[in-house]
Length: 234
Image 1 (cartoon, one colour):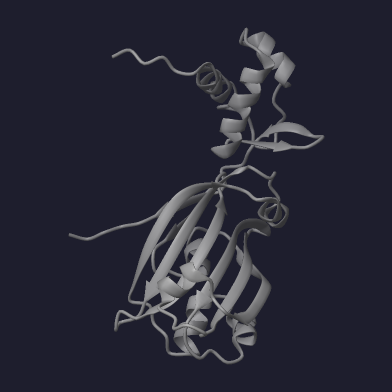
Image 2 (cartoon, helix red, strand yellow; image 1 turned 90 degrees about the vertical axis):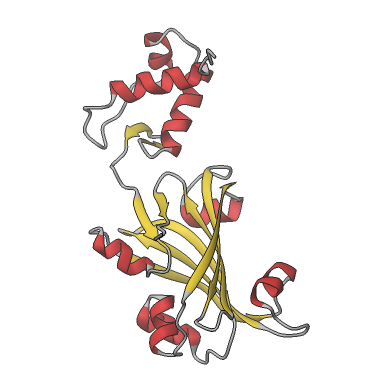
């Protein structure tokens, strides 16, 4: 079967080859120049550049044109600390706490955490940073008694470390659902991307050794900077 590649995909490969040996931060030709060079339309070039930006190979800044991006994807594993993962890769992780509160969960969170009618859970919203740049917006819902949670998060930075060392809550397993998403206006503002930019959404339910759910988290990661790694043993 002969499947023809979309025109923008062909141009995407041509641009990728053009910038293969170019230093990160270097400007690349304008859409008009690329369209002329590859004998195609500016619309096709724009689609190709958008795909390259989503793949982390170019960076597009309003008013500043398009430049070759730094190789800056990071990897996060299941059941490991975000902070520890990134430090092992030579990055500097950090978090900005947006909100810590006690809330009545919606139906989705109630089902995931098995919360009885009228019950409340902790809600933790944070922007996760890597090398001082925003990587993800994370909203975690947590079961149990967690007094002074905000203070402990500020002290330990890592949620999993605080749960383990302060509250004696240890995750034994997690179930992750990974899907594609588009950045909402609020997510775009917090993460420094345009609304509608490609994102990777990870829904995680974490369980303790008794198989009781203790965490339900939705994390929205920038698609140009993130890869999720899951490993299994057989």
